[in-house]
Length: 142
Image (cartoon, rainbow, N blue to C red; front, side, top):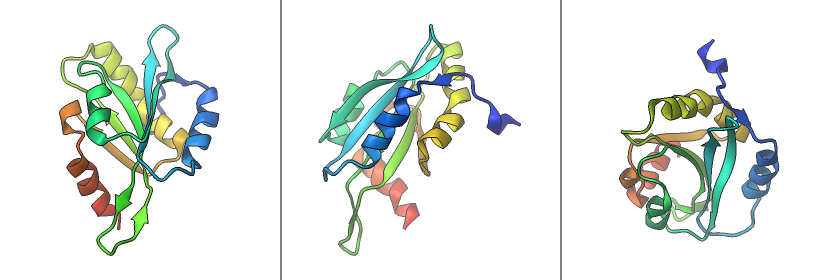
């Protein structure tokens, strides 16, 4: 029953944005940052980054508010192959307003299903979002 919980609505325009993002042709790191609009209780796009370094992305995220990040990452595998996996990262820093944290946590599963992403990670601080973190997590999906 808890898996069917959805606290906030997902902006219908996000479907088009996510589809376009999934099928992008560029061969670089890119990200879409999503946030919850507290007034409308809906998930909306906050920022879009093209050709972004992971450290730059981490620095752009708010340190005291939750965010969802959809990352298209250039992953160089040990055998030389290159892939471009999509990752869903839920950033939930400590010290956030409890009601906002619950809105994000209660909407995460529905948003992951909506975005159709299988590589889902959670971090508690923007400092955890590093190149090493992404590579370590993706190495489990060989």
